[in-house]
Length: 173
Image 1 (cartoon, rainbow, N blue to C red):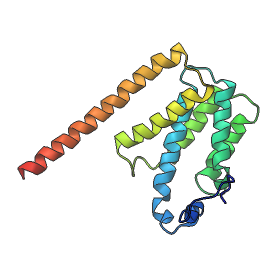
Image 2: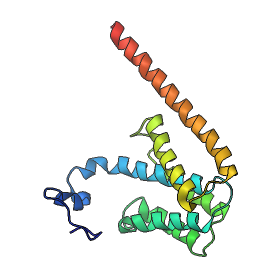
Image 3: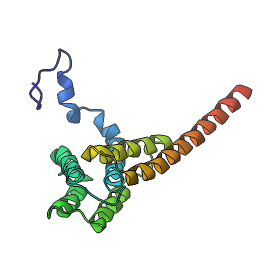
Image 4: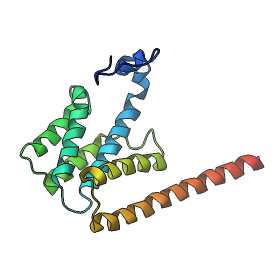
């Protein structure tokens, strides 16, 4: 039985103990980068139109509650108290968002584990998560989102070009 109250098929019991698995010591930093990229995206998504709705606010609360089980571990022991402090009064100001964004950016390991495309896609996932948190997309969000999509596609095109260049060089050798 999982913490969510459903039974796993035979052979999947070990997934429940994922955090205790031996290989986690090798993947923890990259997983933290992915989580931080996603948080940064959520922050961008919920503030993309300059207004933080109650549902968007609650999405950040949900993110904190999801990772609350890790609050005694780095980087959550630094990040969660700052987010909790910002959420404590029920209002998320731009200064508080900037502080959370700054801290999350500082806690990243400077794209050590991911290339630009993967980093951008993880952040885009968070942006979409934040955008859709209130189940509506405003005109302001669409205008800003269109620019973000252009930038993501540009990064993807640059990545594809570099990959193509590497492939051509390998064929000529």
